Length: 312
Image (cartoon, rainbow, N blue to C red):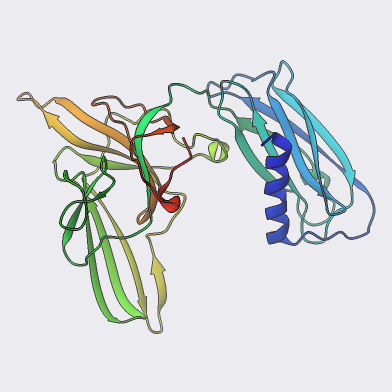
């Protein structure tokens, strides 16, 4: 699928949601200056750039190449829409992860919004590797008792699944009076005292990158547990701290220290998403903090469609 097809698909979906409509009013011109940089803030020349949009309900794309300053400029004369005018950007270059973004120009013509400069980040492809990767879409199989999960097997530890080694412990405590009157607390912890988890946030400039995470996990800063809650009570409504798709995590498991207290062996990985709708990636090599996943080399086989992971 080429760049235009990606842009058309994204814009068709956006149009379905946003309900694009034309005013039939005066023609106005938008002008976009895209500045493409790498992770060291250096300009990326020779990148394929595309800006997709709708004109008279027809998907359109302006494509080109960034110059020596990493800049691509495009403009188009169009009618302002009643609901909003949406542009979609996709940047690609060999040796880099693609990046994608959108920009809403708002209702009606506004030069401050329609003539703009936007900076987009391209991350270099480092060393994608085979990893244990799986999407988890179900909570613990039982309430009110701890259940282990084996990241290498990709299943709950027996007797609830085929897992053998506990890497992460899930404890779901449910206090329920009725379907709409309950408190639920999920505690995520680890069997070893030096195992742990650390939340990370994807910067706005990187949210559209093919690689959402850094290339490596940090060496320290891991917490022994995280706690998520959800509740619903009559007259109070619902509270939910468990389903934030913008949350992501690093983790360290199977940690072993020597007599001097130094870590001699540990496995590192990352999690995209929040508990309990998330995708995890575990590096199979002890002490290697690389978390660039090669989607063609998943070490967990026989995953169903909902469990498969395609993002690096």
